[in-house]
Every structure is written in C-alpha cells, then in structure tokens.
Image 1 (cartoon, rainbow, N blue to C red):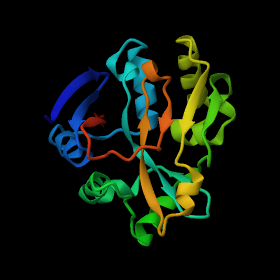
Image 2 (image 1 turned 45 degrees about the vertical axis):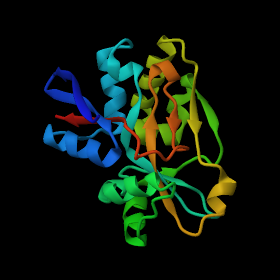
Image 3 (image 1 turned 60 degrees about the vertical axis):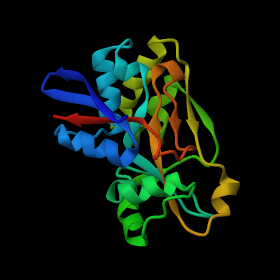
Image 4 (image 1 turned 90 degrees about the vertical axis):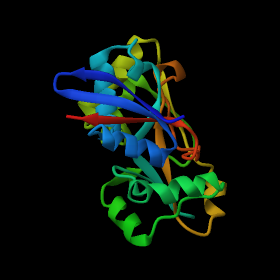
Length: 209
C-alpha cells in the first residue's frame, strides 16, 4: 500500500519518502508540497542528519538518471526525461520494457549531462574530488569529497557504481532512460541504474526548501 513518511523538518527544509510505484510516489510527494530530491540535496541531508538517520541508512530514487544510446557512451543527466512521462515510464517497466523518450526530450536532457561509465566501477571515497562524475552529481569537487569523507567515517572505503550491460544496450533499437537509485549506507551508498522496476513499491524521496 502506498504511503508517505516525513522524516526531516529542520533548518527550513522538509523531506520525506513516498513508498509506492514511481508515478504514484511523485503524486504523493506533490501533495506534500515536495519535489523529487536531487542526489546533491540527498547527500547534504545525509551529512546534516548523521549516519544513523533514516535518510542515511536507506536508499531511494533521485531526480537524476542515465540515458543509454545504442553504440554510444551513456550520459548521466541532471533531470531525467522519465520525470516528464512518469506514468508511461512506470507502465513500461511493469511490462518488462524500457522507457524510450522522444528525441526532443533526450536532446533537452543531454544539455545538462556528463559521461557515465560503461561498466561497473568502484570509486575510492578518498578520491571523490578527482572524479568528474561525482563533482557533477554532488555539486562540485568540495561537496563530492565531503560526501566521500562522510562515507569514510562509517568505514565505507569505496562506492560501487552499477550500470546497464553494454551488450544489452547495443542490442536495443532506441535510446532509453533509466532512473538513478542512491543506495543507503547499509548497502554501501552505491549508485545503481541496472534495475528498471519503477512499477514496484520503492522509496522515492522528496524535498521542500
């Protein structure tokens, strides 16, 4: 059953989690005056709230996503095109299919993007400030390293980035978009776009500032 839990209300910020299929979750967040959180906001709130906080321990979907184009390098985009057609994307995943945005949506999203790995990688937490991907995600090299230091303080020495298999991508007829999951500390705070289960009841975090 779909539900919402507010777990942060401090320093002028409200944030909570909707547990529902992705399209329903965004409607729930809107009803609370929230929009889906960016990974940079998510990371800063984890640092603010501490390692034992719910937001830190548990993962959730965030605003960003990855666009996969057959026989081309994938791009992580700041605003996923999934957000423009959430019902279509949720339905597609429920049918075991990919969500394939229009070329116009892809072009808009790629206007604010960075290259994404084509294979699974591990990024040492003491090198977050030297990774362009993480600087893009977390809001600059200083904020990226601050989150790396936060992870290191919990004993996490590397962050796993889990991608879609390149052979699978190249077999597709069209570009497709995947959502980004930001894992919690209990899972090593990994980044994951390998799954496409928007139709399942999952955590989607919102924020209002």
